[in-house]
Figure (cartoon, rainbow over the protein chains, first blue to last red):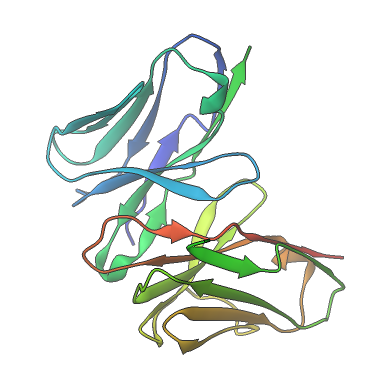
Length: 110
Length: 112
């Protein structure tokens, strides 16, 4: 079945710095979603991308879908302690089946 | 007013026991799921139900049996619990044609 791979697995970031997490697939995806899970919490939907080359922004978060629709990225600028958590890219297949990437666990150093 | 609620939040039990986790959603969604999150945070789908019918069964041991009495409820019963069943189990719901899925707060199952 469809698989999505995420890198890095862990990201240690100094508060105020920027970072990017990446999601890759070996096959073309019809969509990519991003979810955030705070420590001890549950996954919460952030955004969905469906178009080739699509870029969406939510405040300090910028999401991008690759031109070939095989990769996606999440870039966070000026990281804050509230950004701590695990970020998942997710492929939503037919039947509403969500396939999660392995996640990037973000730790922020104050 | 929680959209997707699971009970219990924590469950500690001995090997060999049988336990159930309950899930209810008040969003009017047709599709409900069970996901398992292991210690490395990897989230894997176990089951999906659409309007009380089983749609997805991802090669889960038959010790796990989901039951959907109506489309607002999806319970998970686990027989003969094993140490490897220790994980966080998330219930979720979504609606065809609607983008996002909503997750419950999770049930942390610890088998000792």
